[in-house]
Image (cartoon, rainbow, N blue to C red; front, side, top):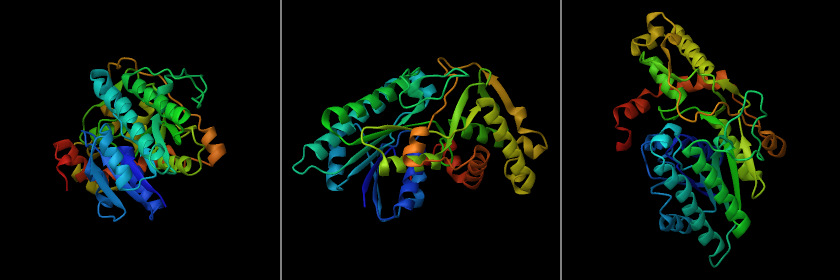
Length: 360
């Protein structure tokens, strides 16, 4: 039985992992830590809020004293570190927050873990798992092999550079101080609770409201899409069976050009409207409600600076060592995502009207 501190637990992936871990490990205690910035949303945790195994703490990972007190007071033995600024566009216009949270915040966590777990009166069995991104590896050409765990780091955005720095800090605390750590680098996630500034939920909600679907450049940038529950399963395997000090790539084996991703999303939404007459009444501005195709909303916009051409994850190490397999095909996972957003209109309406951080 573990007591797990999940940082960034009110964010997209952190919330999904919190739900997943409590469902799969019902005897474990989960302490959820989140400072509730713009992307932090307690509504993401509403379904587990009353679980006696769950405790929410509003706080900053940069507050080392707070983290130390949580580790001691709750007898925490496992940290799963999701907390991060993660939107590339925001890192271009305002990189300071990314340096503070992703680098300084990770270092604060590491210092707290080292002090409590390694320097206390009793050395405590422990595990610090750090969640990172494939963007630390830079970009790939069309014919380049997918990123492996030994691909040299070449980050191209302030976001990616800040995550690369945090990865190096985690590695250093293992090799220098003996902290028991693992790191995972994932490809692009999608699924429930995805904040609507990201490509898939942004385009989905724009389709429902008949708004343009903004596609950077020519839309041929390629991403390896990973259903968020598959990501959670991958992290679970690394925590349970991964080798200390090792990095594991978690991917979906699922490369799609952005334009094709948006076209598939349009096709799926159009299909939902064909089989559900109520949707036409709920979303009258959607092209499908008017008998036209949602792809008519696609609009190409100026590409962003330093936009990476292609990401692709080689997850062979995780697959061969720990038995990982992504279970959700892209069409299936995307359909489940669309259905979740249709079923949870109250959730994204609160984000759109700015009331989602008022509690429930």
